[in-house]
Structure formats: C-alpha cells, structure tokens
Length: 267
Length: 359
Image (cartoon, rainbow over all chains, first blue to last red):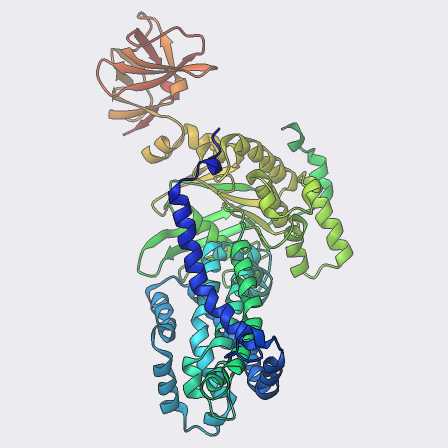
C-alpha cells in the first residue's frame, strides 16, 4: 500500500497555503480587534503593555446592555420554543400545500432586510401604549426574526423520524395527545430543539439591524452599544466590548457545532 | 432458532386474556377527495379467533384494520363493536387494543424495558407491579437480556418481538398486527411467524392480522378474508380459500392455479382426448386445478398430452411447466426425483373430484 502522505505534490502545498491564507484573512482582524481591547494604548502598540482596564470599563459602563441582551435572548428563546415547536409539529403532521405555504411565509422575516421589518413594526405598533419604549418591542422583533430558525431546525428532525407512526404506537398503548407530545414527540425531537435553541440565542444576542431601529436610549442591547462605542469612544473600549461579545457568543457556537455533528437521530 | 419456541403452558400461566368478539357493521371508508378505499363491510370476528386480511396493496385491508384500531373512523352509518360495546366513537387510545406495526413504531428515546413499560405507565400501574409484568413479558419473548438496550442496538426480529411484548403486556382486548413481518428477511420471517402463531394460540386473544403474503395468511389465520379493490372477495378457512376459491381472483391470488378449458354435456366432461363422469355445471366450463392435483400418467391412462417446457428442481418436488397440445401452459408437481426435462413428452391425469368449474 502506498502511503500518500509521503507523495504530496505541489498541488497539496498550494491548497494548504491558500486555505491558511483565507483563514488568516478571516481570523487576523478578529484577533487584532481582541488584542486591541487588551492593549494599554492602541496607537503606541503592544509595547505600551497589556491591560484589563478597557474590559473593566466596558463592564462598568455597558453592563446594562449586556444584561438586557441576555434577558432578551432568553425571553426570545422562551417565545420561539412556545411558538416554534408546536408550529413545526403542525407543519410536520399536515403535509399539504397550505402547510408548505405557511412554511415559506415563516421564512419571510429572514429574507426581508431587518431595517424594513423594524420600520413596519414601528409604523404598525409604535403607537400602542408604552410598547415603543419597552424592551418588549425589541423582543417582538427578535422573535419575528429568529422564529423561522427554530421552526426549520425542529421541522428537519421531525421530517427524519416517522412521527405519525410513533404517535400511533403511543396512542395504541393508551396515551392521549398531551402525553404523546410530552413523552414521545418532544424527546425524539430533542436534537432539533437544542440546535434551534442555540441558534436563536446566538442570533438574538448578535442581532443589530432590527434592534438598531427598535431600541431607545433606555433599551440599548449589546450590539447597539457596540456601535455606539465604536462611533464615539476610544477604539480600545470598542475592541474590549467586541472581546466581551466574543466570550458570550463563541461557547454557544461551539456547542451548536458539536450538536449538529452528534445530534442526528440514530433511528 | 430452537429457543424461540416457548411452551404453551408458559404463555397461559402468565396471562389470561378475555376473548372479545369484534363486529363490523357496514364499515366503509371514503377518503377526502372521494376515493373509496373500502366498500361497506359486514364481518364478525369470533372471540379468540385469528382473522387474516389478505390482498394486494390498495385492496382496503389496512384501512379495515385501522378502522378496527380506531385510527380511522368508518363512513357515517358504519359501526365497530367490541363484544357488546359500541366503540365507533372512541379514539384508539381508549379502545384498549394492542397494535404491532410494520415499521415497529418503537420509541427510540427509550430502552427496551421502558418501551414495554410505556402502556403500563399510561395505565398508572404501580411501579413494583409494572416492573414485574415487564420482566415477565420480556422473558416470555426471550428478550430478558436486552432489557437495558437502546432500540437502535437491536436487530429487526428483536425489534418486532419488543413491539409484540409492548402491545401484549397491557392485556389488550384485541391484538392488531399490520404486516408485522414484511420488513424482515425471509429466514427471520419464518421463525417469528412460528412465534406469533404460538403466542396467538397460547393467549387465546382475538387477533386481526394484515398481510399481502399468502403463506403467512395460510399459516396464521383461523379464517382468511381475501380482499380486492376495497371489497371482500371471500371469507373462509385457509382450506376453503385454497380448495374452493370463490372466484378467479382468489384462485389466482392464493397459490398456483391452472386453468383448463372443458365441455360438459349430459353428465360427461370432455377434456383433451378424455371424457370423464361429471356432476358439475353443463356447457363450456373453465376448470381450475392445483398443480398437485394434476398427476403424471402413461399414454394409456392419461387425459391430456403435452410437452415439458421447463422443469424446476425444488428438492422435495420438481415443478414442471407443461404445454398441452392446445390451451395455456399448465404447472404440474412431479416427484423430486423425477428425471423429466425440457422437451419430454408427458401425459396428465385429471381427477374430476379435485377440479373446480367456473361456468
């Protein structure tokens, strides 16, 4: 048997070089930005020393935005679970033309620019009570934007198992609808629900387009604050802010990757 | 697989199941869009009886089973009765039926033992009692060692045994089986069929079995309901269905059937060169004969002459295809050691008592 690793030609090295170049293109700016957040004076450079001062400053000034972002993300997740999982179930159990139409409609907020959706929300609901000034207004936007991702993720798993027959099996053993849903449908869709949940959390925490129009000075989220700080403060603070954002988002991204590799239904 | 055969006494000791009769009254089914899946059907299944619905796909057999199960409701006017109770309006979860599916329908999120315990949990059986009954049932199905396994760690045959255990452990009023062996390979199919047979006899439960496989139907059914195009073609014991098919469809669907042209006049029947005493209908008749009822004979006592077109050695017998001087080819079973081959000239004898006439 030939060991191919000993016979790498110039093509291999060319491909490796290109891949590394692309990786560098993507990661170097992020690394630079994070490093800037830890540098005492960006314009002097690394020789000015490393510091956590900017990170502390961000946490002091912007902790409100971070907490609000987390609050909205969790609330958004709750809403998409309550709305999205039953919606996916209904779509999975009724494979008709109307169901497909509804599925397409659900994808609309993803296809339409966030700014347009936000404007539509403001025009329609901006005058309803205190909604415009409330964080709930941002939540509505986020739910609208993230719901399709939850529905899609759950629907994909539901489509890969024979849900109808599983449910008929449970029903033949005496289980009513709610019990079937809780003990057979939900557990067997767990991987899809988990993947959808992480997706919703990540998207909600990082959402800027909609949020930028929907927020008020009292309801700033992390990405909005980030834009502010880049626009009006020292570059080190904006960079430190980015660092904080990365620390929040990267673990959930890694988890999501792991799930999508492992979470395929085995039966 | 000798360990798959369990003593009947073991089955009878573990369970006592009431044998509930099932009655279908004018049960038809028209699906949305107007497609008629089932013409109105009347049928009584006796308590403890195994009835097999047999027919090609789309004949309405599965629809009938699903109406009995409560997964479909019959068209207005139709009624389903379990004993004296009218269950037409009850959904499946309130009919107390056991159901076994072609695709097993086992819950992948549960172990073997949890799958079997599911129906008992739903019925709020106390934990200790539940554990005992699950264990008993798993032992009965030779699944004891698999109790803690996940479903995807089992073979097809094991999965279907788990499905049977899960359906039976709740002591259902009737057991419904929807093509339970179709997804299995041939060898497994035979051994599991024997197991199901012993189980059904041992438990004395009323069972409805749906299949498109005539071998399964003959082996398992006390009675067979042959269906075609949404209608019942014939109801009868396996012997009746085999030897006295009600029509040409049933005759062709079950086993192999030869067709011979004949002329009956004045108590005599002319086939080929022979004239035989005859008590059947008069005039031109089509005669149906099983391959095993056509005997090889010499030129002197034979009724029909022909040439062997093909000979297939099957071990216990040799199946010949004989082309008579006129008329369609005939299938004939000869002894396994028969040396006959392609091109040989043969003579066949017909026993008028074993011939069925279709006017």
